[in-house]
Image (tube, rainbow, N blue to C red; front, side):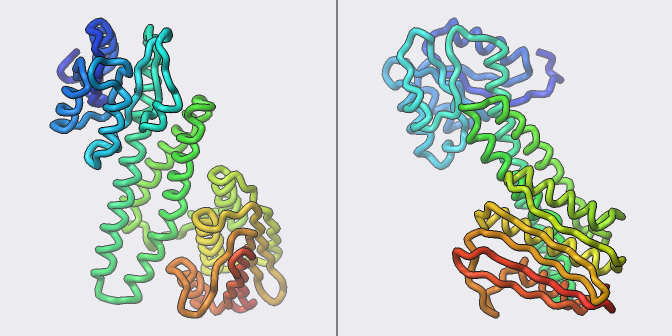
Amino acid sequence: MDGTQFLKGDILIVDDTPDNLRLLSTMLIEQGYEVRSVTNGSTALMGIQAQPPDLILLDINMPGMNGYEVCQRLKANSKTESIPVIFISALNEVFDKVKAFTVGGVDYITKPFQVEEVLVRVENQLIICRLQAQLLKALQQERQLNQQIEAMATLEERHRIARDIHDSLGHALVALNIQMETALTLWQINPEQAYEFLQEAKQLGSDALKAVRQSVSEIRSDPLQGQLLEKAIATLTQEFYRTTGIPPECQIDLSYPLSNQVNTVVYRIVQESLTNICKYASATRVQIQIQTTAEGLLLVIQDNGKGMSIDSSGYGFGLQGMRERTANVGGQLEITSEPGAGCRITARFSRLAV
């Protein structure tokens, strides 16, 4: 391998058959992976402790300590529990798939090896690891930004910028997490569909990282990016449907023009509401009504989720942000909810504000 070639990942192969080690090592090294090989479980555990790999290919039937036992020990150790393990088994061997996944395996490969299958299964698991690392990095950067925000001189400015960061990143990060969870759920029953979810999650992860880096510089920009409100709301609802499978029922009638300020507030309320529903509501139905009249504008967002207890001192940061935004343009916002009875958010803006 050319020394300048990019190493795609560090892989440890554990197999007591030298021919298998040579075959797997060769095919993976040719694809740009860094590969280590050992022939028994105890040696593998020592090597993993000293230098944790990105992925482990683990033979099940080995003398002394079998693959199940090795995997159980890895998952019982906080330092190694997150390392993905792909089991290796021959077609003529007894392979307990249920046990393999119960002890912590993420996939399996059968002998004789098919090069294309090995490479696809290895890369898919590494993609999942990279996405998880991206999500963690995004969350860490968001925390760092929030810490910087809290260090600013004025409390009002601090809260305003924190709210904008929350609005712009919350939905993307929730969507990314849902895509990854769906992919992991589908992995064994429909790998092709799971791979599609992973590709979408990868794009969402890239978008979230980009948003984190740009959030401070773009904090005062127009969130609609010059779009009409109807189109911007349609984009939010499409993304919500893509990540939750729930198609919001939308009734939008903007017969009267709105000011840019009210457009922004309406957009932010819908965005925050959908994010909260996605994260907390466990809803199966969502309704959005936006209607302008000669008297002003009415916005209603309602879901049939698990609801919550409402009191004057119990509003979360997102709901409090809705109230502040609405009040800043002279509107009124009402939140009606009870445990088990869904949630209804109603915002009214007078004609003067609109």
